[in-house]
Image 1 (cartoon, rainbow, N blue to C red):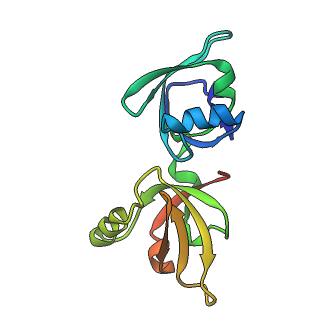
Image 2: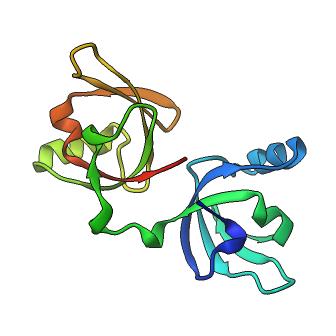
Length: 159
């Protein structure tokens, strides 16, 4: 994992964790900057200046100290070589949805349930016989059959 201050190129990132004082975490949450949100880096940090980000329709300047408290997953590093299917993710582990396979109807149904690109998904529970799988995404729980989860390609991430 890397912090927002360590990002060396412009592009999109997903917030994975915010560490820091309670007031900082609360202030960022009031802005909507919470785990799972996408942030676009417009200008990277220099040696003593902050960085410029685009978040929910507005440009924000972030100090180097604040950027050190925000852990992110760089979306530019998500490529097809390290993908695994969602049904092979271990219990209590997370991943970022990169690609949906399967028929057009299945892909549409999965997207309607909230499984879209760059969504953070956590495997919460397995049924006693291993099917279905309970997932947590976007603040709610979703159960899928293993055959459906096999069509969702994710990049494993420790979020």
